[in-house]
Structure formats: C-alpha cells, structure tokens
Image (cartoon, rainbow, N blue to C red; front, side):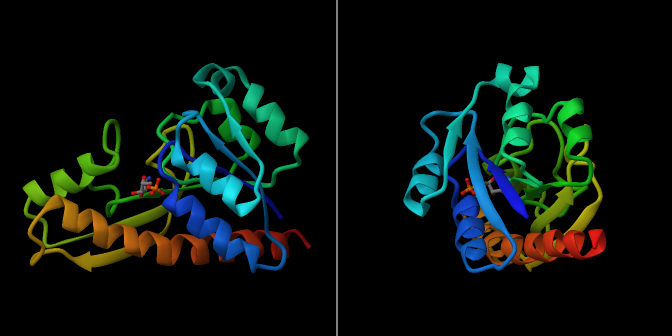
Length: 192
Ligand code: GRF
C-alpha cells in the first residue's frame, strides 16, 4: 500500500512512521507533504530518502494536492501534526483512508484551536488525572472521525504541561506506527 504523510511541524511522528514502515512489507511511504516550507518534517523526509513536497493552503483547498496524490497512486494518507482542515472533496476521495493522531483522549480537549501545547496546557490546568493520545479516522469534521485507538497515561503526578507533552509524545511514537500498520494491512486483506 502507498502512503502519504502530511505534517506541519517538526515531524517526530512522521519520522517514527517512516522508520517503522521502512521495515514493513506491503507499506511504502511515497511522499511527505507539508504546508510549511520550513517544517522540520521535510528535512526528516529527505534524511529518510522519501520524496517531500511543500504545498500551499490554496493547493490543498483547490484540489491540486489531491490530484498529485492520485497521480502518485497514494492509497492512505496519515496526518501527523497537520494543522489545516482537510477539504470535503479530499475526505471523500480518501474516504476511510485518512488517519490522524491527536494528543489527548478525544472527545476531550479536541476541536478548533486544540493542538500541540494548547492541548497539554488545557489538560494540566483542568487537573486531569489522565491524558493520552487518540488515533482516529478523519472526516470533514476533523477531530470527530471514528476513534480507532487510545493510549492512556496517569498524569496526576506530572508537574507541568511540558511533562505531559513529553509523556504523550512517547505514546504517540510507540503506537501510531503499529496501529496504522495494522489498519492499512487489514484494509488490503479485506480487499482480497
Ligand atoms: C503531536 O503531538 C501530535 O499528536 C499532534 O501534533 C504533534 C506533532 O508532533 N497532532 P511532531 O511534529 O510529530 O513531532
């Protein structure tokens, strides 16, 4: 299966995915795309020998990026710290073939403006006992797609939002590659 990863930031999750899939029979990461030309994720793609692409918000909105992915015969799109909303047409073209990772236990601390440290600060200020990460399908309502996996940690003893962020990121790196692999390979088995 051919996979594209979209990210807007440093790309540590993208790197974990590329690393894991480089040893996975049946999954090839064919593109890493970012809406930010300075994003660390593009450099990580180059280091991993994966084609990288900078695209604009307009190219996402106009369907230009979608055309590029279809030309590349991409089967699955994995979002890994991607901050733009996926257009409806894009969601329809890749229906049930887009996954996202969110750094909280959705539906808590999800939705508009809830990304990166905003999430962990809100969890810390709410004095939550636990936090974690959520892997979910992406539909046009973004963080509301069907949840496929949640990893939980006890954060009651952690002393800052930064500590929560660091512990949640470890969970993300551990589980996103494995869960995405199972879902992608299962989808291929189901086709046969
Ligand atoms: C992660 O916390 C992920 O949950 C969220 O954005 C962050 C991406 O971090 N969607 P990185 O760019 O993969 O290091």
